[in-house]
Amino acid sequence: MGVSKKISSGGFKGDLIPGLPEELAMECLVRVPFEFHSSMKHVSRSWKCVLSGLSFHKERIAFGKAESLLCLVQPLTCPPIIHGDDMMTDDSKKEEEEQGESHSHNIMIQQQQPRVTVTPLYGLSVYNATLDTWYRVAIPERVPLFCECVALQEAGKVLLIGGWDPETLQPVRDVFVLDFFAGEGSGRRWRRGKPMSAARSFFACASVGSTKVYVAGGHDDQKNALRSAEVYDVVKDEWTMLPPMAEGRDECHGFSMATDLGFCVLSGYGTETQGQFRSDGEIYDPISGSWSVIENVWPFPDLSPRGRTAASAAESAGDFRGCRLWCFIDSERQSQPRWEIEDGSMKWKVVMETIRLPVTTMTSVFAGSLSGQAVAMIGGGGEESGTMMTKITAEKNGGKWSHVNTPSGFSSLPFSYSSIYV
Image 1 (tube, helix red, strand yellow):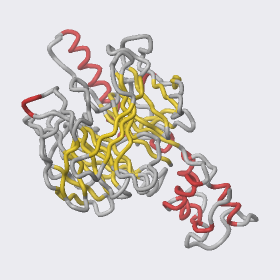
Image 2 (image 1 turned 90 degrees about the vertical axis):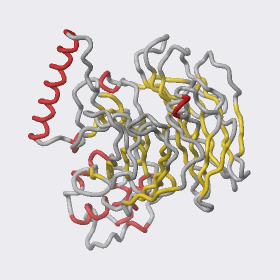
Image 3 (image 1 turned 120 degrees about the vertical axis):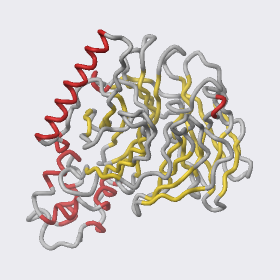
Image 4 (image 1 turned 135 degrees about the vertical axis):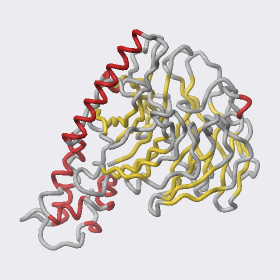
């Protein structure tokens, strides 16, 4: 398979690699692991021009050389491990050390006075499934607790949205944008995006199309379930309010629909019914600018869809309008193997396929998907305890679970995740 000619011109003159035709030179460049792209940008202006373009990263995907990353927002259980070009400055290291000393001091006080609690620190961890490596991305500000992590593949960006302020424990409007492709260094550059219109946490969130992220529901600073929804355009750096949902939905889960750029908000609960998860959901249609209700899509009133549902690897054929999801359940829970539900408008459909986890109902689990595979972080309890990551291949017979090497510093259950190819 050859590299296409569309990225060989790049707006520069001269050979990419002296003595080699451009197409052959490009075949060499797309094979270099992502962690070395920072150094490669300093080789020449032509290399920097090529590697900084989105077309180069698309070519890596098409050529089968892109690396699959799983980004996890999780509590820090040990000092951050910094990877390659994410090394902090001396000042940031000093601040990190001071924070670490303060954190250790707080733990000592907690042991002496059990009533004193310590607010956990959250970070963005990355598992490179292609290279089977882990690292933590250095972020210039403290990551909000319980923030949502969402990726925009075509734009090469990962966003952290909302959550709680680490000090006040109040919902925030914050938006952090991590750009994997643009900028100096490795291309991993952080910036603050325009804040949401409303502070919220535990809300539905999903990337829809190439540049937009939808959010809906969650709760405010008074723990009231929210009906409001809005959409963020990462290119324009602006939010647009959407019509409110029919119901307030706290701890709901969001997904993009296969066609027409729809947005599905799954389950959640109301202000007066905390912990009793609704069986229905709502779907936003950007063409009509309205919401429709989809009934009986979530059959577990005692189980949150967060960390128990994920977009499946099945490709949508033809004019299928909806989303295909995996539903992860414990080995002892009763459930249908598969169900299909249409919304009230008869336009959208949700197809849910059950995947049984190799754990009992007493085990903490956070499950998701990565590169066509189902993945799960396993918490305490049962034979599979030890917070190991496991994965199952998407085969007709269900595949087999296998352990992934997970260092202790990355073994805590995440709150949210996203995946991206680089």
